[in-house]
Image 1 (tube, one colour):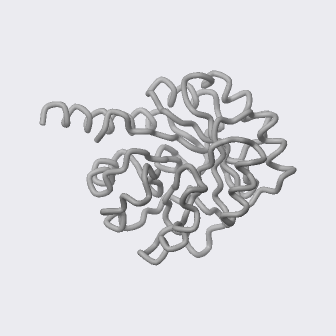
Image 2 (image 1 turned 180 degrees about the vertical axis):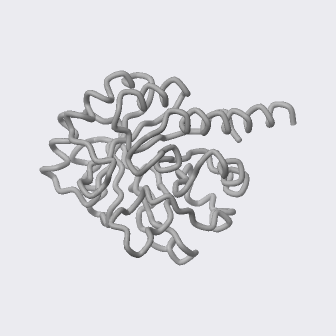
Length: 222
């Protein structure tokens, strides 16, 4: 694992959780703007939570098929560093959003098998980074944060996707295997550091980063 691994903790809702992820050195923190999610916050809440992170971590606003009015409010209030689009936004919509806000965009994709990567190709050169998450269970209304993984072997030899972000069911118990299989340089975690949906657990956050530190220590002595 590279010492420059990007770690994004997403769906933050409390000052205690923000403090824990910053103390552990997260590179990105994410706020969810999707009312159906137990991790949903409004722009004013996100701005207050993000204040200690300015200059320490990249602040990511995560939306699902948001229109211009929603994005205008989020961007003006939160002032994020990055926008993450977790819906069915077309390449044209992604380009429009990039031009409107002059911000980098992470485009998320739901993966179950190799055919799901076909849709990614039309976003190359448009989205600044791809995020690969597991497809949601049938009855879930959430496009992400469901605590399920996909087959990480699907990401072997996928250099064409660049510095993608790996997501979906990651936790302290499986992160070593996930990084070994994918070679990813960026990861996104939400439910894997929660005691229940939407409730981040400082002990689980600490345990996750401790697992990452063990990988670094192992690599140093290898």
